Length: 293
Picture 1 (cartoon, rainbow, N blue to C red):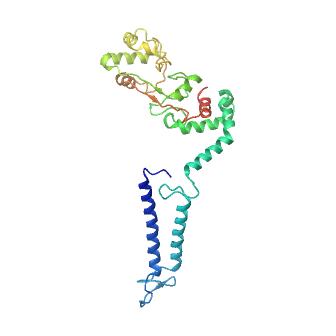
Picture 2: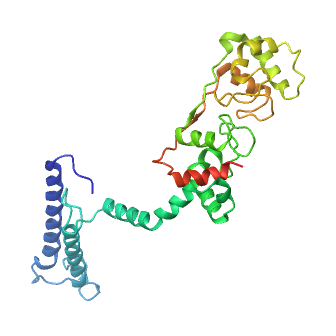
Picture 3: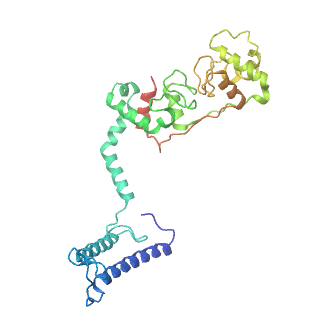
């Protein structure tokens, strides 16, 4: 049980709990033994031996049930946390149980987990059992954004099965992306290019995948404003997180409207950091084996 912010509140809760138990005990006792039993009985139906309308209390076994519950509650509060900051005679807590379970887990599996963390990706990929574990970790940690199969979703989260990796698709680059996260910045260009410039650049970018863009009127605008990040040929730059424009793989949609929206408004994608508090070295190595092909 968490500590109370002050001794006053701890004492207040303890007193309130004990007074409530005492009040309930008095109420139960008075109902069964504090009445005058010499009253004249009224004619009417009787249930369970002595239960009738009017002045008779419930059957005596009800009393023992309630009284036993009160005794159990009192014993429980003496043994376990419940009275303010009083830890209980057994000194039990969920935190201590969790710590014990974690210590037991580490004692049993620390060696195996260390071996997995040192395995190569190829060794893990050849072990069907480890790959099944990797898939479970992925569904727990990554599927909310990238989808249960890792194929992206909502035109916002990238497909992890294609060949395009905005920040690089080798083992070390993906490790860096997962560990430290990524913050992509694509500024809006409407103020610089104007409506006509946005239209021409969007058409030029769409033509890059076809390899027939050399004489396009948007090329000069692209070379002047976009090539420094995305490259003169639209191949992108993983060091900057600048995406490839010369294929047909688009994170935010590859139709003219979506490309114009990207150029006009900009895009600001965030990949949160999954540091060692979220994924330890073993879990990270398993996920890498799933992603790096």
